[in-house]
Length: 482
Ligand SMILES: [Zn+2]
Image: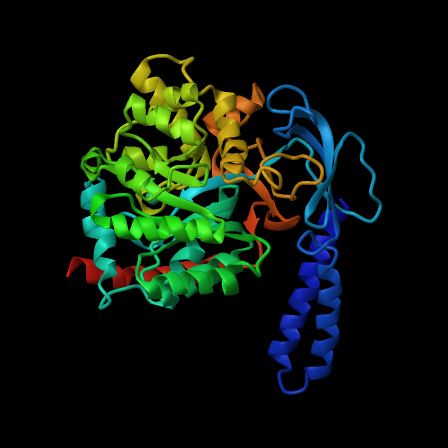
């Protein structure tokens, strides 16, 4: 109850300040300053900047840590979580913290935030584009023309699209995203990263580069000046494995090693890419290894799956995108059998229903549909672990995120099962996968700060963001179609 009261008092004070500014704009300077101080001190009591937050009385906590809770999902019933600044301090029953801001989680489910391992955030601007195309047709229609400098996205447009996608991600409970950026121009990159930074998301920026020395210089500059100073940001280098781009791939593979970051490529997404001699060019670029991330990994032979396993190459599975682009179904049971790590991704504009619940259902459903086996890998619990746990592990971030383990970052979501799409209570862990929707995600915490609170996005005017994205999308649509 304390939380509710504090929140509503803060809203009252903010409203008073706005009224004074509006009605007495010629003589309000002193009054306005006083009220601003009050609003400021009030904000210290909200989850955004509070040093401690006590999430009290959750009906179910899925910690994803079998040392903290029971079973493979690390479950605890009727328990609390204490957040101290950006970290999880304690998980258990009847926790006390007199100075903490209290969030009442009675009847709710708490779990780690989702890790979206492969995305292209600018592509909210091309939602709905190339609806009847496969990957190649979609790229030719909706993406590749934008490399033409005459119609390339501006910094403002990049910001607009990426910012919209960040809201979509927070809304669905994603707390970490990997943004494989097409990096059309250096200006685009600036707008892209600024939007990611403003979002409050934990993010990895994957910069698509070439062997051109100017490209390499900008990648280094961006990492040093825009990524490294941000504690929520990390960096990857992006490229594409095909014979015609061997020089670029080799340059990016070398650069990734020099910078100590991962190389992120699209790997055999469409059957036509088998002609690209993908594995021989990856070998020639000395790219095979645990720092190689392959998005999709669909059209793989048995031998190639073994090669991935042998080198600990990691795969990002994007099932909704694969369905949309008629790309085929990933060989998930075989990858699992070989020991290849696989995480989940949203994959940008080819995923017109970009929510993680849909993604989990599609990942599960595709394997069942093609095998006629409801017990085939992965099971419901496996797919529920896939986004938070497997995603964090394959990014080598599991020491910080992916489970509700004390000491880790306070990146978590509170799910409200009391909605018409989710109730009643039968087997909640299963219902998250089969029934969950973004509307059930009531709170999203990243670094202990609430970015979604009681079902509402915090600190941003979504209407303004959508308006800017609409303006950018209208321009792009016009230039793509004419
Ligand atoms: Zn992709």
